[in-house]
Image (tube, rainbow, N blue to C red; front, side, top):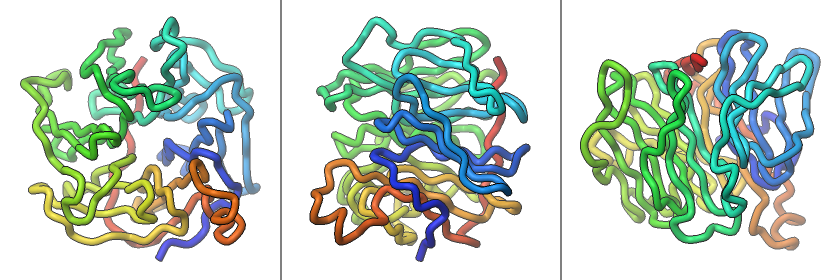
Length: 287
């Protein structure tokens, strides 16, 4: 069972990132417009001017941060940010959602409608100064992750209850061929696929919205086991800790009634479970 890592309630916790250089977890409260973290001194928090959802690390002092209008270089110490490129900035219906750095130094980011508008979102990739549309017509983008052998990427549409797997070019990491279904709703009890990460053995760890768990699936899509999380809406996992064996999971209070929140006040907190599996260090983003 997971234990509390940070009890600050997030309306929509997302995008946990273990920074391997700083040995520090960062995560977002998307609709609360906050970046949160903890270090040796205690909890840290930055207020943001718009909704941000995911990040990769550039170096020990900077993150690449995805917002509802662009990708930004964020200075951890000063809190300043500079825009790298626009991201659907002329589309006020959408915002960023799930995202992750890839092994080539690129950054994948999904968008979605702020009101879950059907097929309003997309999957994008930023690589060597270019932001390229990969997969359009996604309703709720999630589960962006990369296999340890660098052969495949995954992404999901939560609204469809479907996770795809797409083959990658080994030289530069661009998708090749058509994505294929990897997991479907009700497979292994899976209902609403949210954020995901692979461990070093190629096991797929998937947060399942509404299920209070992070479930592990084998490379053939078969269910292996699940780690319970102390919040109904488990939203995204990340491996971290000094040995990368701790599973951190963000959760959300969104769409839960006042009665549920009163009875279960830990909804929206961030959780940890030690010695789950051997994770991988997140790759840096190369601008």
